[in-house]
Length: 115
Length: 115
Image (tube, rainbow over all chains, first blue to last red; front, side, top):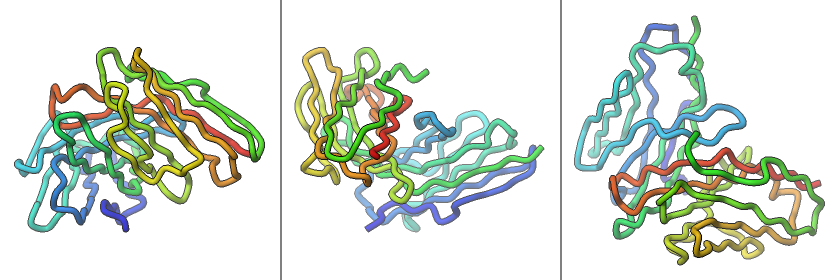
């Protein structure tokens, strides 16, 4: 039972254009959603998160949108740069009494930004 | 650099053997998480410790165990190793609810190869 899904295994965009990465989830109890970026042979790096009580969070070139009714979130990168080329993971969390909680990851989308 | 350290970086061993992976969380973080990334399963949550106590368990095999010590470092013990245990093992840490978004910081991982 895959609770977090990223249906596009790969995405290719031109430098300077917008990259849109999508993620769907099934469990309406999730409190937070996070995006991580991962390069080969490295651990995932936190990018941006959004609480379930918000519908948008922006940080520089990165914006995450949450549509709770559709159980869908997306990550927008504008403008895309070649250094953004990596695997992007969507993750969902239910926080346990303010003591953290497990992250449930999607399968990842490999983004390639072409110069 | 996330501030989370993991040793060793690489580990090659034989089936039936036992290994110990070590993780030191970021300074001040009370929660430590272990994740497994294999080719066909993506990033899977194994177990969480908070301030020395087990807090959550995922699909962790009975052959695997973990603990968190008083200095907050953690060890993941894998025994009776099988070929299918070959994977990347990541440790992550998070603060004690300071930000509330369960942002987890990942170490560089340990690549385990079972021959």
